[in-house]
Image (cartoon, rainbow, N blue to C red; front, top):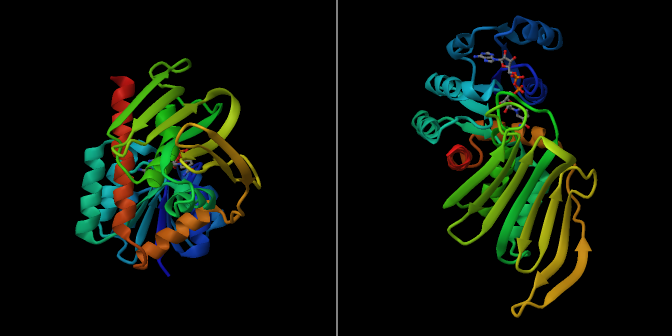
Length: 316
Ligand SMILES: NC(=O)c1ccc[n+]([C@@H]2O[C@H](COP(=O)([O-])OP(=O)(O)OC[C@H]3O[C@@H](n4cnc5c(N)ncnc54)[C@H](O)[C@@H]3O)[C@@H](O)[C@H]2O)c1
């Protein structure tokens, strides 16, 4: 069993703790806030508690560190963990700048350790279905992809909608298209907290000619979590707000001379397994030597590069 330590125990960390406690040997819990630690101690008495991250680094029996602290801390903590020879699962995004992410990827290769960014949606059975439909050729050539991730609140004061919401859709778009964008532009507005965009529209164009769009907002009457893929033969919608119809395939397309075809609509069965459980399992399998550990790190770097392009455009 892999020995795991989790750092960052406020909102998201406890979900990771719950899963890793079931799947691995939870040996450390770490947070700067003693109150958080005390609350967790009652539930996980077998784990050692500390406010000092160095205690995890110094434990030679500890195999892997899971980082669920605020984004600006990710790079430094992940770097220290890799340098100490630990496998690392780090919440998205692992770094705020492409150059830092490249450094982490190189360090993981040098140390022969896993560096897995927590892009949860890439383990969602609905998103995996989208990938299958594209890879099998069922949709035909993909023409465009767009995501809507909008709702009212929670309005954050320290992280804009691109970094908080957009990183999810960006990871999915790049996973589906498997290309780096040649153009990534973003426009937004900050109506509540000055300088922190609460509404952002993004446009991406890829070398293959495919295009993508993301609408990200905390100021919207709808709650939407959708990703639409338009192919030459069929179109498909992933809707994470739908309890049962997560993926809908439309036999709709335009023929070579522009004639429109609209046929059957189908709803493939999608596994109801918890994406977070699948994500944590995948990390442990990587630590165990299964799959291609360099791919998750490289895919994470692609997301940070695109985020950087979009951020430069938004603030340019
Ligand atoms: N995958 C998802 O769907 C998802 C959802 C929510 C949050 N997240 C990610 O999870 C991470 C944490 O988010 P959150 O909302 O729980 O953050 P948060 O700010 O609520 O909690 C972070 C915790 O980390 C602790 N911390 C900060 N620096 C530390 C350090 N150096 N050592 C030890 N503890 C430290 C803080 O005391 C706090 O308890 C973020 O990266 C966020 O993007 C992912």
